[in-house]
Image 1 (cartoon, one colour):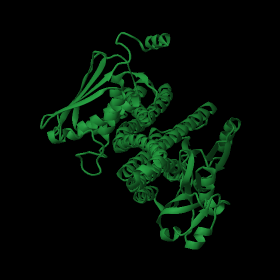
Image 2: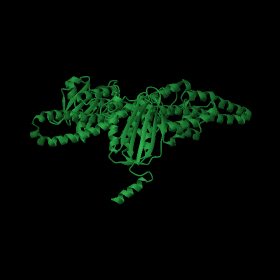
Image 3: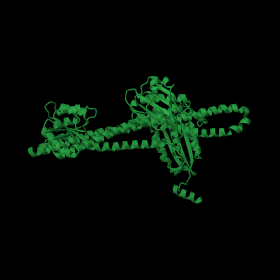
Image 4: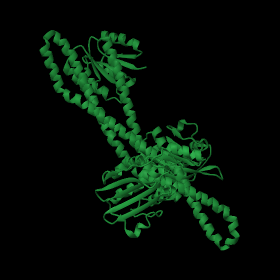
Length: 620
């Protein structure tokens, strides 16, 4: 039920307002002076305040700033029996939503209150959306840093230390830890513990099902605990042994291949705050990446140990071959899985590298949308003032005559720049719609690009794939190069679209990085003998002849440490080969480089995908 507080020294006005509002389902509070009204606002939640301007102790205009300074200020509608344009403008500027002239009219009062509730609802929704956007940007920043850490090393201890350091800083936590499950004892072991009492914590073990971490590992569900002492699942054993005091925490399971391998925890905000749902969702994203990284590092360590054993077995090869054949086949299958995960990790690493730029691209339209909304709000306030002026002038025209009233209206329109406001409102709305469309397209392209590709081929417009990829990497390109599109007529191509987008992204980023200051990137497409040809040329520094035959080798890179994994072109080469295509490169030092991609067309240029499917069915 919505609550309305009436602050007026006139008991008759209070009774009239209560009579008007009593059938509207409102909870009504009253105060006879400014002091009592402020005391009520500090003690009880109020949605709308009906505030008299003229009162004996303090005027409504004097306490209006105090009301707006409250932690959760209500919407204020001012009332007065002394109609004045100056007092109306002063009240609106002070933060009042509307202005009502006494004696109160039921229809006018109810309409003003209903509009005030609509205004507050829109404001609350806007605040919630902005908060959600800030959380998403925070998540993207952590995603970028985590992806870089994952791609930087396969040494498990080093990997976990790096990731947990990032996690502790991001969540502003006193301590954070990773507990991995020991299958032999069914206990959780503190593998990494950063922050207060970190070294002492490593000596502790937690049985599965005991405490918060044990519950999360057993139930395979995340937990957000605002107050640990109020949760019956919390076990004080670790705190008692270390002297640490747990207040609030988030615990998330680490799972890989449908199996829980451990738990990640962040404990106590350094600013004495509590964690929220956004923090938990962000930690779940990090946990998924950590679990994959742990699995990759574990398999890499297992493969290294296997290689050491194989070298030892080579001395007695004839005797050991039959015994180890199955083991080698298993290792080979695991290696293929590792390769598939490395391809996806490279893809996620690239997205992580671009995440800050994408967040910048999103912030630009959101910024001017937010600015436009504020300006629109000011325009609406001015227009409401003008309407109030019209009402007052209409009344005065009956008494003093039409010319004088018209002159007052013209002065109001001149003071608010009415012609400019009327013309600018349409522009603001168009700009805001364009900004919202840009954000939607960027998020949609990023969502489509980030998901793991499946093995199912589909018919794709190559030009749409190129445009989508350009949208993702645009922040990396726009300061360096002009994009020149020379698109030809192409048939639909049956391919793995997400993987093909990864090839385009790797080549476009390399092209931009090869340009020192300003240059051009040209994309040319055409069809030739049942092949689709894509040429991507840049005006960069070019590639030296001595390194040309190495650029498709895994882990080969000429970039500075931390700016590349050396897998981008190797992955691209394998993807094009998977499509039975060819990728070629030509380069001239100081003039630029051209990558040529040739992909076979599954259907003829004059055939439709549906017709081809029908022909294939008949052939079967």
